Image (cartoon, rainbow, N blue to C red; front, side, top):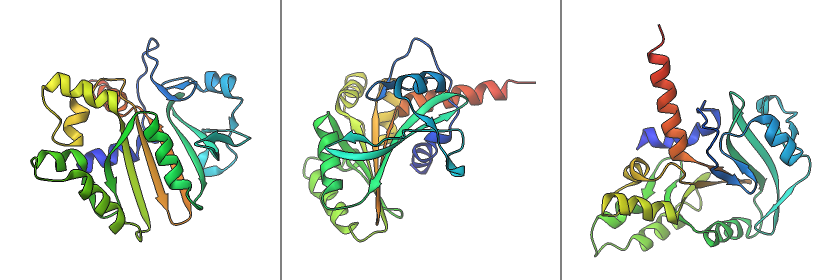
Length: 222
């Protein structure tokens, strides 16, 4: 599980291979693996000015999502788009509003992590019919409200169902889901600190597969 958390956290720094025929949407009109030139042409984004974001692209004007305005950053490595992030200050019901917007687009919260502990909804479901997974998730969320951070991982419902079809049963945890979900599975991470919100759009299965492929290619190099 720790390995999977790490995979999600370093997604924007990974070096995935890219198949030109793929089109896995990340956010609106941008796709996993797009070149920096293509993203600049399609979004009018410019190189980010901050040193910590060197090599990435930033939108000059805020974008609208969930009836809120966000700063937008496109993360690349090896000239390939790996994730898209939105940032804004935490205020009022901004967290609730963005979570509702993502859920309305066909995503479900599968994982929560507060920096020290996590809860996996698939693990809760696998404990048996008498275990109330929804209540367990809500309790974890309430208990984490005072934490300095809380990360929600939401997975596309369609991808979850395709994994069920492949396995003939519901995945027992998020790692098993990733092993059986289709390559074009999409996921969203919502990170809440005490002062800000970050929403990251990604293609985790494609990233994991491509990262493994890159490692194999490196290991074969003499």
